[in-house]
Image (cartoon, rainbow, N blue to C red; front, top):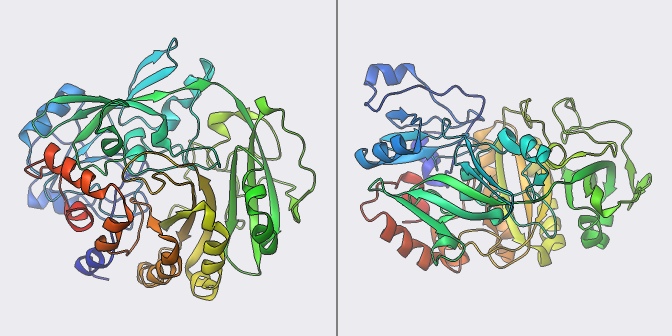
Length: 452
């Protein structure tokens, strides 16, 4: 598929890849010859950035100066998105050097970090000091700012997405000025999950809680009929629960149940709604080695080492893959799952694994979970772009009756006109984005297509 056709048929989004080397640049334009020798891709390698220049400020002050002087620009975090949300027609500004632990306020239980910090960079130290975040995504390798900007999440019927722990942010505006917003500011619900439309986030302050340990128990071969009859009970069985399936054989291949030790969890036994307890650590894709996965078998460990599925020091998931993810109201969970299951013969040939999770409602205008509890149906695809992009509209059509919304950082084909209707606060979000960035300094083809 040609790039221009790919952009037309997908809503490309935010990227960030911790394994790809960054290009060290000074604030000058890279020559055409130099640029042709430098191929910068996202984490999965499915998208090549088109920005002419990559800049790497060493401080917030340098970031302000760069933002003020540059024209079109976008922040580039861990490159873990699967589309062009973090690309720019002119300059990308890497936040990899803005990764410092700024302040731990023990009295108010908050932590301030620079926006380029990855969750795995500071979580262990946070635990050692007696604190925790409420949740983590499957991967600890992603940056705080990038995760929050795209409403990235973990799992849990009572756990909101990662942005729900944000108390305040510091934002560099198009003029290079610093703006601080907290939960009392009217624009806060728009800017935190802002899709990069308002400026470049430089610092984030997160709400903390006391440290806790987690045990993780895994079960295999859960009958789909048990999911139909007991969905709420299954997903509420732990602090965080994930279902993994390839949609075949009327079966969920694995159930990962993560429970906090401070709730005095009881042994779940060998039978979990018809699924059998695993006898060894497993990878979500059962054929792959579990070496990179967080410890299972009910062995307690720190929150930061159990809530993610993958360890910080390893390549997460499968690596060479594509991803898409869709959100529907939790009230429609079983109907939505069965609607997708009907497409199993078309999905299976291109699929590595699907993960189903729950996310609690939040108040962020462009979050898929705005004012509604949701489930997410996440697809990890084989790197077969043509086949995957032909399959996505079928899934989206099957989920359309439930008001399906996509993850902003993954692959989808839902039209902008439909998206605008689905997001109740879209008009207010758009008006505020234009107010913050009237000349379109932070606009790119992703925002032009999906927002503007």
